[in-house]
Length: 359
Image (spheres, helix red, strand yellow):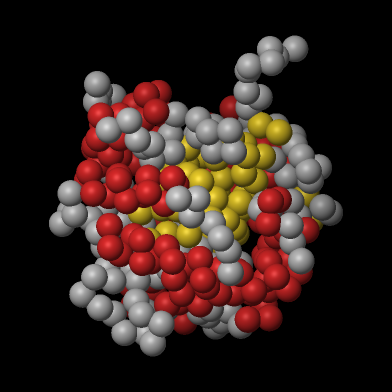
C-alpha cells in the first residue's frame, strides 16, 4: 500500500471509464483525454454541434476543457463559457484553460499591444478571456508561444500576477523550447516566484523529438506536465486520408493549402498509417467495434507517462465516443511491449535521447 505522502500514478474517479493523471508535479488531476476548441468551436463546427460534443465529452468523464483567446477570434472561449452555463456544470468539477498571445479588441481589430506576452497584453487579454468565459478565474493559463521581444522576467512576473490575484491557478507554456522553459524557471527561482508547471506541445506518432528527447531534463528537474495537442496529427492518423484522398467535409477539405499540402505530400507518412491500420485491426474490439487506427494512435500518446492529458478536437458525438474509448487500450494493457515494438518498427523515427543539463 502506498504511503500517505506518495502520489498514485493515476486516479480513476469520478468516471469509471476515464483515467485521471496529475498535471506534472502539481496536485491537480486532469482527465487523460481532454477537449479543445482549436479549428472547431466557433470555427468549422456549428454552435449546437460544439455544445453537443462538449456535453458528450463531459458525460464520458472529461473534466479538462482547453481554449485560447486566439481560437476563432475569442468565439471558442465564448462557446465554452456558454456550455458550462447551459448544462449547469459545477465549476469546481472542471479544469478550464485558455492561452494568451494572439489577442484583439472586441470589434475584431488588432491593436499594437494585442499581440505577444507584454505585461500589458497578458493582463488585458486575461480580463477579456474571463469575460468571454463568464468566469472569475481559469485553472490553467498558457503563454501560447514564446515572445522574443519581451524580457523573460516581465513574462514570469505577469503570469505570477495572474496567480497572485486569483485570475489563474497555474501557468504554463505552449510550443516553447526546453531552453526557454528553463530560462523561465531560472528567473522564477531567483525571484521566489512560480515557474511554468505545464507545457502544451504538439505530440503524435510523427512529431516526437521535443516530448521524448528535448524535454527530458525538464521532467526530471521540474516535474513538467504535458497537455499535448494534435495527437491524431490533424486527422491524418485516423486513416481517413490514406491514399492521399481528401474526402469532402473533412478539415483538410475546408482548411487552407498548408493542411492539404501536408496530406498531398505525405506519401511516406500515409503509407505508415496504412500499416498502423493493420496493427489496430489485430487488437480486437472496443465497445463491440473493431479498434480503429485513430484509437491506436491516441492510446499511444497517453501511454507516455509524461503526458498528463491529450487534447482532442471533435465535430461530432461519434468522434468523441470513439476517442474516449481509446483509454481502454491503456487501462487494459492492450498496448504490450510487443505491440509497441511493432509500432516502432513502422514509425522508424524514435528520437535519440541526448540529455542536456540546465543546472
